[in-house]
Image: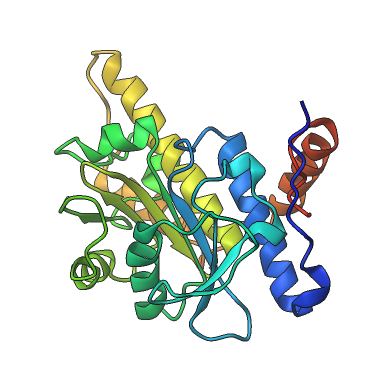
Length: 263
């Protein structure tokens, strides 16, 4: 069966800058799917529309991440009002703008926000110890990750202020008893951060399941390593690997019955 999208292309109906943003965001959705970080049709990734302050792109609530294309993305404002969406009965997930809109409004350095409910992420979110600096990948987040206590499903706009306060200036956050969240100056950077946060959680769960004594580096080594892995120390994250990620998606798109992300 062929599941090619029936959504009409909007490439000629939007600015070149918005179209590029749509391509980048759709690619990010596909990569989250490819690397096993999806939760049925739930969760969301947002990206600010270039040149349109207060406008975001988000997924239709009802599509698999592997179905999402550049033309199927919805444009909303920071309060969740739909500015434009394709002709479909699908709407948007309310939690998408409660969580994401709050961060986009408060953090002018952020253009993209990713939220996931992965098995490993939820496991670590339920651990009192939080994320442990067990290895080089996880040490990146040493003293550079926030925590937000669970308040129930994120549909209450009153939670926005507390969530933003907890996030502070960090680009990664563990939502306790809930999942993971990352943000960044670009969608590429936000994806890179989420990929490594997810990998850190997976390795922690594996290490703790081995039921052996765990070894942590010294505080001096942790601080040095964490500093070297911050995006402003050596190079921004997401730049080096993004072309390779797009090549991966192009190959998969040409082999798959699902619609290519660039539609």
